[in-house]
Length: 358
Image (cartoon, rainbow, N blue to C red; front, side, top):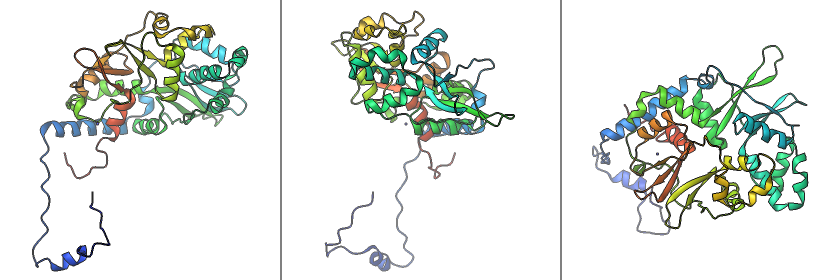
């Protein structure tokens, strides 16, 4: 997914109003000829509109599975214990609850642990105190290392899914908690958390018009293809963590000396490294760190610049995809396509253009 400047100092220029006054009566200003819309462009426009229409009539609650579990952390919980619970339950984020005020307090994500590691790196004398840090101290850590905190957002589960998507884009969040009001206590309660992946899979399963999105990636302003952060197997993990934090990204492609993509280091890989609060693992290089991944790691997904969005939606429907590495025929890195990129495209591409009719 301009008017020319007027030079008031040039005496030879004639004002627009004067030109209009000299036009012969009955002669109209010729209109520029609009380029005819091709069939693929029309299908692409209709496909995007169908997806948006679907998101506007379905609610965030509709995305939730029939059965699910929800883990919520009190902000007074030790960071060390929160890490253990995340790993034991196979999750990478959890809503936060302030028991003192009985209110929703944001979302714990891998970014918080990356910030903690950055703090440890900048203040090595503080490593002995890390195990005593509580979740309510994470905002202090953000300020200490100078990172911009993510905006705390939530949405009512009965609000349109479209609104949830817009809030996620505006806040740069990859997931959004659903917060309702308890009928009896009249207090807020966290119902669940909806992720970009779950939303896009919901679309892929229920909107057949995704098959109309047949324009290839190379014709869409979709993904990142310049100034990409990369690393090698020999790169120290600490260096990659700096890249993740400083560039506010969730993954770094790993390349060999020929620029061929061999793997991807993800923010969630850091969770595995420090799961036993063994911060010595952060002194490993990328190759050593990736060997500690869980056995059920799904692998990395790649695509080509000629691939179309309809085939990418097919992949999302069938597999748990969080990003795709765009490569050439020799598997050399070209770019990165994230779920945030796809969500932004289907919501904003051509939005507000009311001159075209279906």
